[in-house]
Image 1: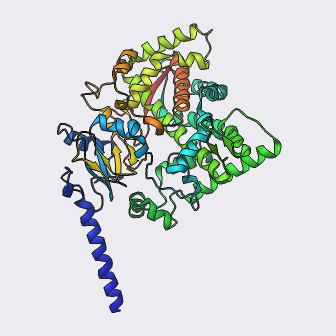
Image 2: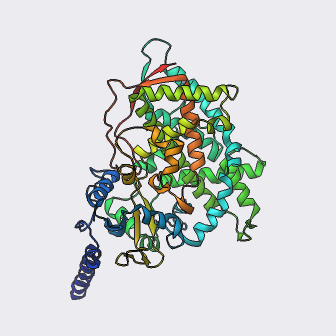
Image 3: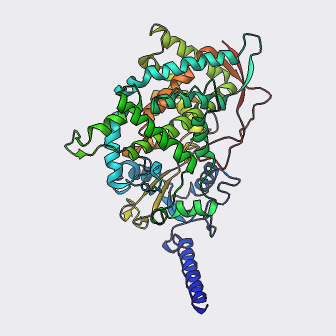
Length: 506
């Protein structure tokens, strides 16, 4: 009994020491930080009543005029350098990338194989996998998948025509669900080669499992916070984050799909086909002479899984927010419709890979949507060795320290974007983009670790929106929430409830 008391006292003392050290880490180094909460750090309200975007924007605005290159921040128990200076952000993401290649995210390929994807991996494993996958996202490969996306988009238009009668006044439609059904069908076809037909039958297992990943966690707040704050410890404890039914569904689906295609020698124009080729070819030599091993089934499943999650949720949300803004700014919507019509006239009236790329104003509208509704609010990196901020020797990011680049806060900074709450696609004219530093717009990240699927995400959003805008008009109605209410529990920028708009045929 006495031993247990001593053990309890010892453990309590260690915990108290750790908390005290963590809570005072930045203060002891003369770096400003808002006093952190013992458990939530500077994330009070996280996943309860505040979205991460608002937490980060408020923190950024508090220190924005103080000329600190970075300030201290505690993301739960993970001490972080919160980057205030855009030049420092550029160093971390691009110039000094070799010291910030890792994200420091939890992944456990042995016990939780679906976490072993490109977004999570670090070090040599990330570098090898990035080299393996980069050739699957070239312009040539995008053209390869383009006809598949067009086929789904044509069904999308047919479903919309069924929803919107010819009668005057059109219909009130919940567009968030409809956009998610479109992108689910695109990703299901391009990633798995499966005709999901979610547009016609919304309650498919495929979609339910994707939604579940974003809305439900395997553990409660305490364990989820432990895994995020101490990913290496969580991995040693063989912890998992993917729900068991989600794990079983996607692992089973990938194994069955790969086995069937290999047995029947089936070839398709999709992402799965490219990954199977990587699996089958084994080791190969890159252009730089480096030898890279092929994918095994576990690695293949993880990449398909993250491709599905990133492609269906981010693109559907972007399209939803875009239509929401266009419904409020019908002059911009009409200008976009005319631009789409003009481009199509120059390409024989057909939606082709080339005509979609030529829709410059559509690209501006999407870029402004991503600025105003940045789906992932921050970029995360980890220092591999001590880093002295150039020109500021007092500011040292020690080895192992997490670095937070608050992208969504940059996007609402009036010094970069005057009148930042206003929806204005002209901010992304060719001239203004050329005059702006690339790190002032970060919905896809920047540098060697930017989003590898950016081309694909942009392509499916452009196709979907081009089809909708040339065929339908969108406007607000009595059920439209202005402003929108965002869901604090969503892993990306999600809304509470649907987004309702009035839709009429053109």
